[in-house]
Length: 123
Image 1 (cartoon, rainbow, N blue to C red):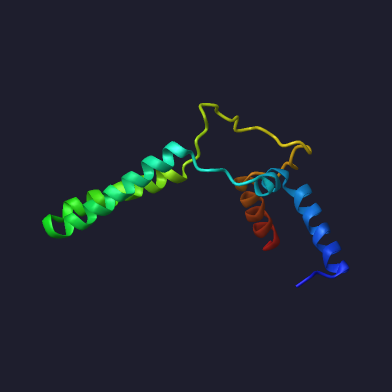
Image 2: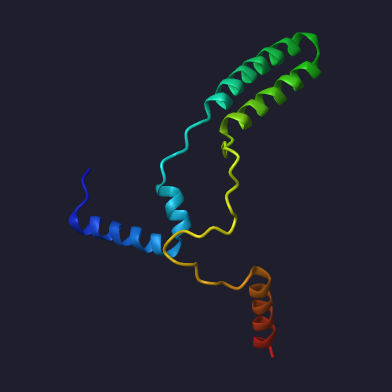
C-alpha cells in the first residue's frame, strides 16, 4: 500500500524530528546491521551442537550432564551474538556529529524537585 503525499511528508517530518532529538540513536538505527564474526559463528555452532548432544545424553545418564549441555548452548549463543570489537575500544563519551544533546537534570535531582514541589503544594 503506497503512502499519500501528506503521509510521506508527515513521515519525513517525524524522521527529521527523531534525528534531531537523539542523533546517536538515529545513527545506530540507520547503520547497517553488523555481520557475525565468522570464527565466533563457527565455534558457536559447534559448541551449540555439543550442548544439544550433552543435553540428550544427560537425559539418560545424569541430570548434571544436561545442565552442562544447557550451559554450553547458552555460551554458544552468547558467543555468536557478541560483537567482535577487533581490539579497538570505543570511547564511551563519543558524540555523533550534529551537536551535543541537551543537558537534562539527573534522575535524583528531578525526583528531589518533584518531592519539593509536592511538599510545597500541600502547604
